Amino acid sequence: MSDQDALLDRLFAAIASGDIETVAELYADDVLVWHNTSGRARDRAGGLAVLRAFVERTEAVRYEICERRHWEGGAAQRHVLHIRVAGNEHSIDACIVFALAGERITRVYEYVDGKALAPLGW
Image (cartoon, rainbow, N blue to C red; front, top):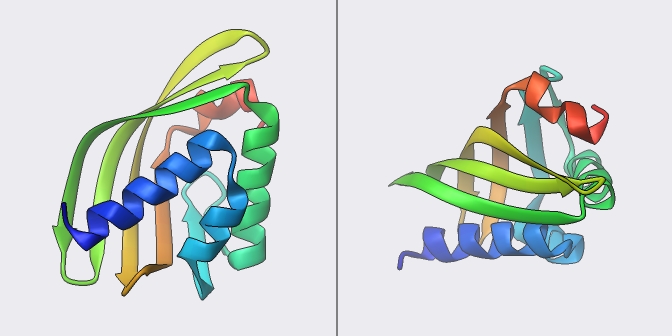
């Protein structure tokens, strides 16, 4: 397993368990988190706030990784996000591109169908 795989596995395990403090440890101080649904980048505090709102709205979270690609200083992951909201199961296809520096995430570019986020009230 590459160092990048270990970092991303740790990130997604933390999100799935609602451990946003671990996510904060993995984000660089100057991380930018961009979502195609808003078309804007959020700073570290804003990115963590979105994740906190996400885990507050979900009862269960599981990532089904379809593929992951690596290159020097970055990686991309395509996955299906399985969530339970208000007792109902939902699946969301997503792709995230990461810029990585050492053991920290410096950029996140998340692509998801905005309509699929409707169960979250977004």
